[in-house]
Length: 232
Image (cartoon, rainbow, N blue to C red; front, side, top):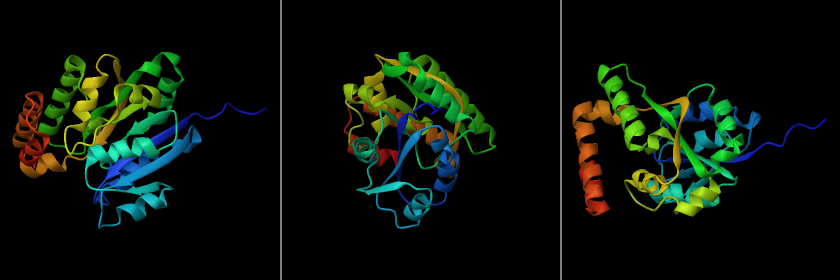
């Protein structure tokens, strides 16, 4: 007896000089093809390290473009195959058990007009990281605003309906989430463990304050190029 046909899912990873972290990301995705018919796509923004070679070793297809994450995500969505798409950053690894959770979400027909994201954790034992995780949980629960480092699982039809990612150098995740808010954004009970480098480098308080400033400027309509310079 033939088994159920596997659901086709496209996984899009934007990357730029990500060799220090992408191996763990891809390792967490390695067994996806046991459940899904997977199209794994790396959209590279001009890496000069061995990011592309690592991705190829995991069977990823490669697209080369300019270093602009919004543009990379948008191009990836156009090029990847599958009725469902999973966007994941190159410095984020998914907790064991995510495949079963995602499969259950996809199999539920009510989720055709819903999108999903993962619970955020940082790869840092600093107590400041735990506090930021709690703030992120609050932001997602009450403001319905997950960020790109929490991943995004979405059906292509819904993605197209809301206009998808825009070629923005920053705030591309907030921009898309704003357009998704008329629909349900569902938290998945699985952790996405992301790099804390940008926080530990500048300090959690300074980095968080800068992020909040950039978000405020975005909602005030300040030009994206200026916000990007402030973001650093």
